[in-house]
Image 1 (cartoon, rainbow, N blue to C red):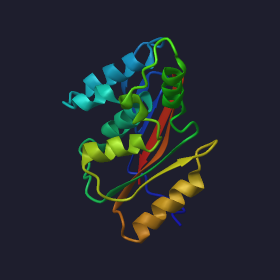
Image 2: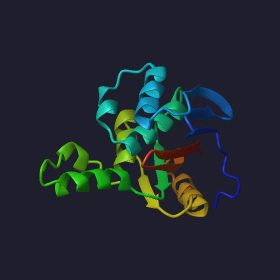
Image 3: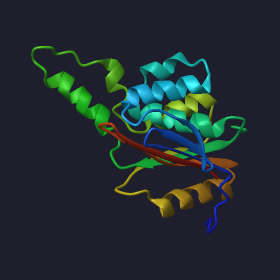
Length: 182
């Protein structure tokens, strides 16, 4: 097992701040809703990826963390191992509300698509053309041993040369992403 995983790069997004390897890269005002924060962070990247605007909040958070950490990185044989506490609960609640609203019944397929937490990993894989292993775990706290054991397995077995792993949690405007490139 990776007793001391070699972390090449890290990205933390929380409290309206994006930090790469302990260096503040971008921030917004403290009372900005996540949707505005995400939009600003996306514009700061200066990339053209219109699909970003259609993603749910969890996918936007994961996408941004991955995008910031993977800039100028080789994505060949890069695996993805993520975890969070709420799964896709934020989107699930919105979808359920659209179903229960008898006055304005309109369940949207675009919302339904994001009712699986691993979709955020799929968005990263699509964006970066990843064709290796991918896993998403749901746990009360960051399952460090599980994540790093899985990353170790992927590296030792040759299924991946690097692993992007970490925690991506979003529920009702509370968010935190901590990704590591191992």
